[in-house]
Length: 209
Picture 1 (cartoon, rainbow, N blue to C red):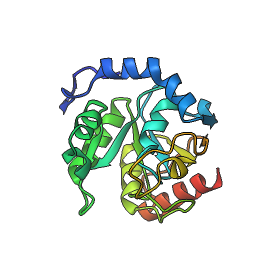
Picture 2 (picture 1 turned 60 degrees about the vertical axis):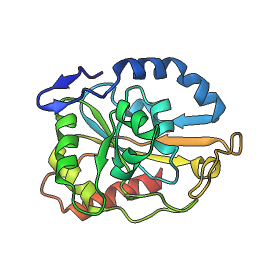
Picture 3 (picture 1 turned 135 degrees about the vertical axis):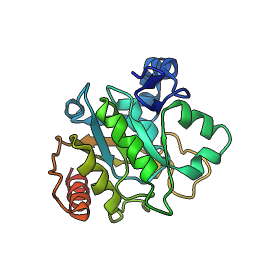
Picture 4 (picture 1 turned 180 degrees about the vertical axis):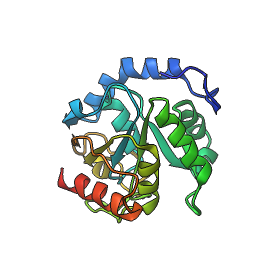
């Protein structure tokens, strides 16, 4: 877990106690959402790593933290930090705001710093939510982060969140469908690989799970 500040990274808003409480009650959420997970042993319990998952629902970051052995700090679009209540929650969860309208160097630097001090950062290579049962093309910025961070990438495929809370839905459809999460073995990339190629390889591994 974080201390409130490591190096020059300001973590004042991050809630260690919040995560401790969440980890105690998350078995309840696992049952409510009927979450099944395969390959959980592939997520290292310590050391910097990137969780790279497909993305079809606002539930995805939540359910990944429900099954993870450690907190996953997600990169999230900055617009979410303007939504009342949600802004407070994701800030306490250690989310990293990203400006998707341009190459956001500051968010990239922060993510790399967190990875260097041994944290687990979550990313969605597609950049935004895909329609149900589909995938979108991976963004090259993901490859840039992976290349600079030099940490293992854990590919993850989520199925079912697009049935429970699809794009455009206003309410969660509890008990609509089980959520299945498959975690792949760690991937490693060299810093001289093309960013776009890295992103494509990660997305291909996610699809193959």
